[in-house]
Length: 108
Length: 118
Image 1 (tube, one colour):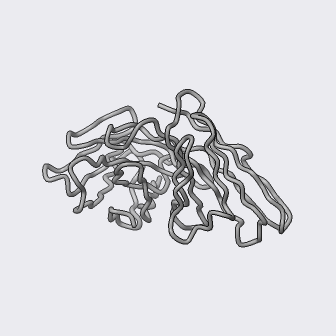
Image 2 (cartoon, helix red, strand yellow):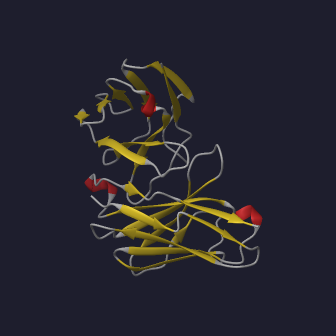
């Protein structure tokens, strides 16, 4: 079973920041938090991952709480092409399971 | 990190026949590959974990004799759907990793393979 909980859907206005939350209260010390997104009929696209420090790359920022029980993926300036299902995954020792994800819809 | 390629992107086969899907790690060696299945409007479901040179580990409810997985090299894993039936029609996706998750390696996914059994 997936170890994460995400809201099923979110909307965001184009050009605004999209903040996608994820709860992973049972995360253990050596587990990383990974974020992927999937656009219809394609394989999941890697976005970002982290252990306990906040991370930033060209696509997004990942904010992990100090207790590591939750995280937030931030798309700083959402575009229509960011409409997708976003998956937050806690991965442990050769085990990567997907939850239901959050369907983000970016609106004009 | 690995770039992962799947082939074919889509395939149509007759009921009762077998079909093979390839998953290749293009720019690095993948010690572990994962196979998923995804039905319309559902999330990815892990089918099996494949380690190079050893037998795959199947998830509960996944028939190992029906979904044959071979991981003979560090860059190639194959999934063979044997005696396919229409209910096997799905989107099959693989991913590849080098090392373990505890090392924080980036995991990349293939483009997926659409299987339609008629």
